[in-house]
Amino acid sequence: MTPSLARALNALGLLAISAVLLMAFADQFLKHDLPCPLCLLQRAGMVIAGVGIAMNVAIGPRPAHYAMAIVSAVAGAAVALRQVALHIVPGTGGYGDPFLGLHFYTWAVVVFALIILGSAAMLFFEGQFEPEAEPAPRRLAGLSLAAFGLFALLALGNTVSTVAECELGLCPDDPTTYQLFDKAAPTPQ
Image 1 (cartoon, rainbow, N blue to C red):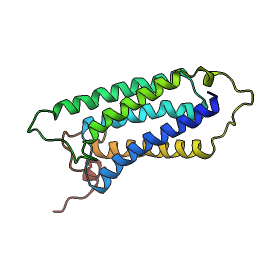
Image 2: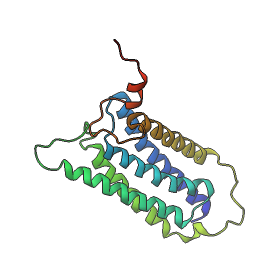
Image 3: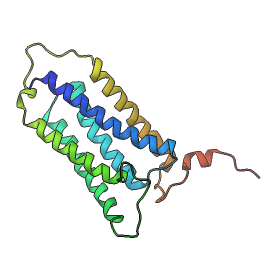
Image 4: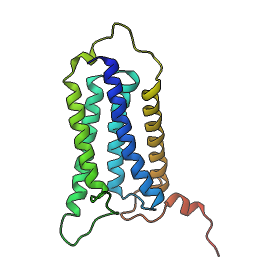
């Protein structure tokens, strides 16, 4: 596998991670379903895994980048499995509405497993780590630029959204409003 092909495959993986983050945002803003603290940790794991993949896209594939994606996906999966375990007891219900029959935290386990498997599989192709005869262009273009730009925008959006929801303190267990905006809005007398 050439470094160029590896970058293209990583760009597709980055688009997939971006699609997951976009679905979470759609649920948050269109259905007014604020993410719980465990959900925010899962998003952080998804973003950090995406940063590892994004580094493969931007500066070329490296084993350390795949390791970053794998380690953060393992951490994210642990958080997601913790949330699954909280709601697995009959009668406890779930957090949020199901999507295609499963809750987002269950889907997170699946996505994190795919990130781990995909990154591990990419490590088998050592040719991607060899220098190319003709160096890749320094500037991102096409699919790589679109994937990188969309992911960066979603990562920034997640950061802003989390600060708005939790400010700089602890996040509420069952959030119903954005704490930052509640304090900014004047209270009627």
